[in-house]
Image (cartoon, rainbow, N blue to C red; front, side):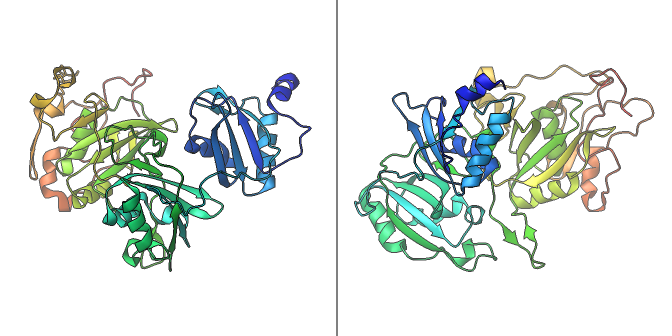
Length: 427
């Protein structure tokens, strides 16, 4: 970055402050977006968004002065400016030394509660647990969670002030039931006041925010797999909470992976209800939903570390998702809801039968069938010379004795395409 551009983006003459002033932000920049930009440099304890006549400025308060200095220094010397949604953001120290939000005193009744959960970290109490506790008093419209100087907090929106008041009167000073907390949390207390908000602005469904009134609200891809509640096993180590939805991370992507490919792989263990493919941090991931946790557990254990194609291509790394029921809005090569009959889909979203692939391989959706634990598969494509044949899904009938061979996975009904994209044969 040239000195002239650096001077236009930073003001060195200002006295450092733990509060930074950010300008040229995109329209209605959210608190989540600000925290995502700033959190590599330290802990954010307060924010003030959508400031100024054009609502394109914001203030961010770090817990420590050195963290704010670190962020300013980094972008002052970087050749790449700070960016949010592709827009260059200008950063400078603020004249203020703390952010004071002009909200109500907390005693004026409203339909939105401000809840401080004392004695826990952000990952200890999930948004689903918060919803479970507060929905006992009435319909919860929206929830937004965040970290402030006071600790882990949540805004909870009810239909009216009367419902919010009943929840506040019953829960203020009380603890979340012990069975809903991880074992390493001894106790936690709820401190509840009223918020000045009346209608929370939730832009994405995520592990930090939820709008229960809008099932069509998009899921934030960057937050689809957020911090999950920690559970400790008998040995004191963290245990991954089980789920009927699996998260598959796919590495060494030499060949295309579509919902049809994933359906072939994962249906070897049971009925696959839904699949959603997305990109995160430059890699491809997929969510696969089964009817129950037991089926998902078997698939996770069997598929971890295995490759969809011979030669080490499209290697799977499996974990449990915190989702339990995926929302599928489009039926294409990246998302599919198999619980909806094809005839019930709009004509433009009905998957079309694919033509036979080289070597005689057929689309598994139209050439294989799953009934209980029995399978009939279509023609198998022969892998290139010198490679072992792919595993036959009909072997799944003897699942307890199955040990997968190196380089192949259960449910794989085909080998790699004849030629990799780069023109070289797989090793």
